[in-house]
Amino acid sequence: MSNIYDHAYNLEKAIRESSEFQRLKTAYEAVMNDPESKQMFESFRDTQLNLQEKQMQGLEITEEEVEKARNVVELVQGNETIAKLMEEEQQLNVIIGDISSIITKPLEEVYGFSQED
Amino acid sequence: MSNIYDHAYNLEKAIRESSEFQRLKTAYEAVMNDPESKQMFESFRDTQLNLQEKQMQGLEITEEEVEKARNVVELVQGNETIAKLMEEEQQLNVIIGDISSIITKPLEEVYGFSQED
Ligand SMILES: [Ca+2]
Ligand SMILES: [Ca+2]
Image 1 (cartoon, each protein chain N blue to C red):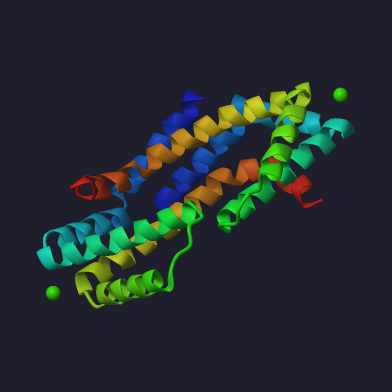
Image 2 (image 1 turned 45 degrees about the vertical axis):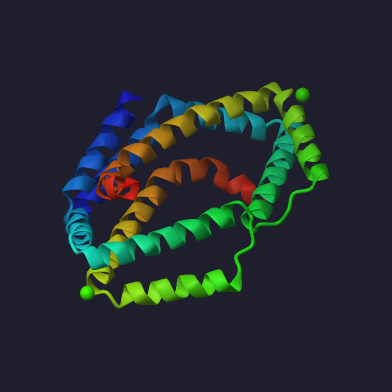
């Protein structure tokens, strides 16, 4: 069992030292160091978190809210500093998704077959 | 980057070889090899998946469904073979949760601070 944790910490270190993670960090700092971008990004996050929260609580999302979210996304996409951050986020999300698939494979193999029948 | 994947596969192997995983597998096979337990377990899973699906779609869950789910849980808890499986699942879930916390720490450190201010 300690072995599992050793490997998890090794993986964490590898993520932390990866060029993808370093680029994400740099991109995030660039956003945070530009007041206009920072404010825009935080408004974007707030909007997203609000919608997620509502969805998780099973509350209805109004057309107005969808429209507002769309506007914030458009605004954000026009900001190069934030667009760069989102690109880096996406690349790291792919890696995190891959890792998640890899490490849950043993569990899937246990449950996989009989769930299909 | 290949380094990240190497470490992810090492972690997968460590999970697969852990006594916790081996015990889960054994417990699952015991349930699957007992027709009564198998049927009960699958009915339990179906009920759970149904409720999850409804929740994710933001559909309302009726009192009747909650009551039905509660009955299935009680039934299942009275079955020693399934109770053993659920115990092993819980132990592995703790490990998977720990792993998830460990490997998402770098990301949290990037985003963590300025989300609080
Ligand atoms: Ca600008
Ligand atoms: Ca029995």
